[in-house]
Length: 172
Image 1: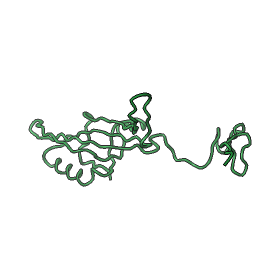
Image 2: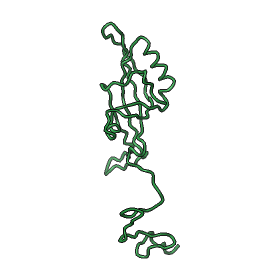
Image 3: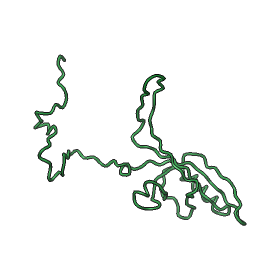
Image 4: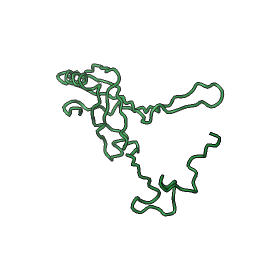
């Protein structure tokens, strides 16, 4: 689902991001605390605001959000991903997670709603530097032109004799 181009875009003013580290820490009073990661991807939480005209747009925007805003949808946003592509904004999949807060403002002769909402997005694997893995081992150079001076473990049919993969369990 793509955010409709007929609806207002988020404002740059008030746009902010928080990256969840996902670390759980022990509550040890003495010594070093222990910590571990809860997840491999780092969810990003963003706060965004929209300026929506009272007449016609506000009802349409709220209806769209009610129907689609709580599911994943694609919208053009500024940020790290856009910078990676050398763009001001870039399509990003997000979903709203927090309450929709609206403040009515009078601008000139018109009434406008300043609508704020919290959302989250998770970077896709290629955006985190995580690429699809293959089962092939590449040791220096390329698969078609491998290095001849590196041999690590070889293959199950022809194991390396000078590398200890796992220590031998004695007495079991």
